[in-house]
Image 1 (spheres, rainbow, N blue to C red):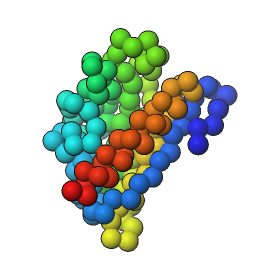
Image 2: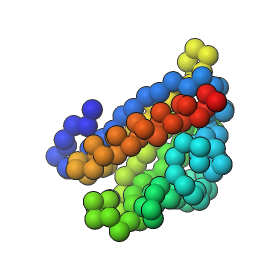
Image 3: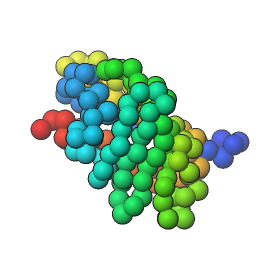
Length: 144
Protein backbone atom coordinates (compact mmCIF):
# COMPACT_ATOMS: atom_id res chain seq x y z
CA UNK A 1 0.00 0.00 0.00
CA UNK A 2 2.85 2.41 0.78
CA UNK A 3 5.94 1.18 -1.03
CA UNK A 4 9.35 2.66 -0.37
CA UNK A 5 10.73 4.70 -3.22
CA UNK A 6 14.31 5.71 -3.95
CA UNK A 7 13.37 9.32 -3.08
CA UNK A 8 12.21 8.16 0.39
CA UNK A 9 8.55 9.05 -0.11
CA UNK A 10 5.38 7.08 0.39
CA UNK A 11 1.94 7.08 -1.18
CA UNK A 12 -1.44 6.25 0.33
CA UNK A 13 -4.34 5.08 -1.82
CA UNK A 14 -7.82 4.55 -0.36
CA UNK A 15 -11.32 4.05 -1.76
CA UNK A 16 -14.80 4.37 -0.26
CA UNK A 17 -18.31 4.17 -1.64
CA UNK A 18 -20.80 6.89 -0.71
CA UNK A 19 -24.49 6.48 -1.48
CA UNK A 20 -24.84 10.01 -2.87
CA UNK A 21 -24.41 11.49 -6.35
CA UNK A 22 -20.96 12.89 -7.21
CA UNK A 23 -22.30 16.46 -7.08
CA UNK A 24 -23.26 16.04 -3.43
CA UNK A 25 -20.03 14.29 -2.43
CA UNK A 26 -18.02 17.05 -4.13
CA UNK A 27 -19.63 19.62 -1.82
CA UNK A 28 -18.10 17.78 1.19
CA UNK A 29 -14.66 18.45 -0.32
CA UNK A 30 -15.00 22.19 -0.96
CA UNK A 31 -17.59 23.66 1.43
CA UNK A 32 -16.30 24.43 4.95
CA UNK A 33 -19.59 23.63 6.73
CA UNK A 34 -19.81 20.20 5.11
CA UNK A 35 -16.09 19.49 5.45
CA UNK A 36 -16.42 20.20 9.18
CA UNK A 37 -18.75 17.20 9.43
CA UNK A 38 -15.92 14.77 8.64
CA UNK A 39 -12.50 16.39 9.07
CA UNK A 40 -10.97 19.24 11.03
CA UNK A 41 -12.12 21.93 13.44
CA UNK A 42 -11.79 25.12 11.38
CA UNK A 43 -11.48 25.58 7.62
CA UNK A 44 -10.14 28.21 5.24
CA UNK A 45 -10.92 26.98 1.76
CA UNK A 46 -10.55 28.77 -1.57
CA UNK A 47 -11.41 25.89 -3.94
CA UNK A 48 -9.86 27.08 -7.19
CA UNK A 49 -6.36 26.50 -8.59
CA UNK A 50 -3.88 28.44 -6.46
CA UNK A 51 -6.47 29.00 -3.74
CA UNK A 52 -5.76 28.41 -0.08
CA UNK A 53 -6.38 25.06 1.64
CA UNK A 54 -6.01 25.34 5.42
CA UNK A 55 -7.64 23.06 7.99
CA UNK A 56 -7.07 23.16 11.75
CA UNK A 57 -6.99 19.46 12.49
CA UNK A 58 -6.38 19.49 16.26
CA UNK A 59 -4.63 21.52 18.94
CA UNK A 60 -2.98 23.88 16.49
CA UNK A 61 -1.90 21.16 14.06
CA UNK A 62 -2.89 22.84 10.81
CA UNK A 63 -2.86 21.10 7.44
CA UNK A 64 -1.91 23.74 4.91
CA UNK A 65 -1.42 23.98 1.16
CA UNK A 66 -2.90 25.22 -2.09
CA UNK A 67 -5.51 23.86 -4.45
CA UNK A 68 -3.90 22.50 -7.60
CA UNK A 69 -6.98 21.32 -9.48
CA UNK A 70 -10.72 21.65 -8.94
CA UNK A 71 -13.07 20.00 -11.44
CA UNK A 72 -16.64 20.29 -10.13
CA UNK A 73 -18.21 16.95 -9.24
CA UNK A 74 -15.13 15.03 -10.47
CA UNK A 75 -11.79 15.91 -8.87
CA UNK A 76 -10.07 17.97 -6.20
CA UNK A 77 -6.29 18.09 -5.77
CA UNK A 78 -4.39 20.16 -3.22
CA UNK A 79 -0.97 20.30 -1.66
CA UNK A 80 -0.67 19.34 2.00
CA UNK A 81 1.79 19.87 4.81
CA UNK A 82 1.83 20.97 8.43
CA UNK A 83 1.97 24.18 10.38
CA UNK A 84 2.77 22.45 13.64
CA UNK A 85 5.00 22.47 16.68
CA UNK A 86 4.90 18.65 16.65
CA UNK A 87 8.40 17.63 15.52
CA UNK A 88 6.95 14.48 13.94
CA UNK A 89 4.70 16.51 11.65
CA UNK A 90 7.00 19.48 11.02
CA UNK A 91 9.16 17.31 8.71
CA UNK A 92 6.31 17.77 6.20
CA UNK A 93 6.08 21.55 5.67
CA UNK A 94 2.99 23.24 4.16
CA UNK A 95 2.48 22.28 0.54
CA UNK A 96 5.09 19.49 0.50
CA UNK A 97 2.79 16.57 -0.35
CA UNK A 98 -0.14 16.13 -2.73
CA UNK A 99 -3.69 14.92 -2.03
CA UNK A 100 -5.82 13.92 -5.03
CA UNK A 101 -9.49 12.99 -4.69
CA UNK A 102 -11.34 11.58 -7.68
CA UNK A 103 -15.08 10.94 -7.78
CA UNK A 104 -16.60 8.27 -10.03
CA UNK A 105 -20.27 7.42 -10.52
CA UNK A 106 -20.87 3.83 -9.48
CA UNK A 107 -24.19 2.02 -9.01
CA UNK A 108 -26.40 4.43 -7.06
CA UNK A 109 -23.66 6.54 -5.62
CA UNK A 110 -20.06 7.64 -5.82
CA UNK A 111 -16.75 5.83 -5.60
CA UNK A 112 -14.25 8.20 -3.95
CA UNK A 113 -10.57 7.49 -4.57
CA UNK A 114 -8.02 9.33 -2.44
CA UNK A 115 -4.31 9.34 -3.26
CA UNK A 116 -1.85 11.12 -0.95
CA UNK A 117 1.67 11.16 -2.41
CA UNK A 118 5.09 12.67 -1.68
CA UNK A 119 4.83 11.73 1.99
CA UNK A 120 7.99 11.03 3.99
CA UNK A 121 7.97 7.27 4.52
CA UNK A 122 8.00 7.68 8.30
CA UNK A 123 4.74 9.68 8.10
CA UNK A 124 2.95 7.60 5.47
CA UNK A 125 1.57 5.06 7.95
CA UNK A 126 0.29 7.75 10.32
CA UNK A 127 -1.38 9.63 7.47
CA UNK A 128 -2.87 6.42 6.06
CA UNK A 129 -4.48 5.57 9.41
CA UNK A 130 -5.89 9.09 9.77
CA UNK A 131 -7.22 9.26 6.22
CA UNK A 132 -8.98 5.91 6.74
CA UNK A 133 -10.68 7.32 9.86
CA UNK A 134 -11.62 10.60 8.16
CA UNK A 135 -13.01 8.85 5.10
CA UNK A 136 -15.11 6.61 7.34
CA UNK A 137 -16.45 9.81 8.95
CA UNK A 138 -17.21 11.23 5.50
CA UNK A 139 -19.03 8.06 4.54
CA UNK A 140 -21.06 8.18 7.75
CA UNK A 141 -21.82 11.92 7.55
CA UNK A 142 -22.91 11.71 3.94
CA UNK A 143 -25.28 8.85 4.79
CA UNK A 144 -27.08 10.82 7.52
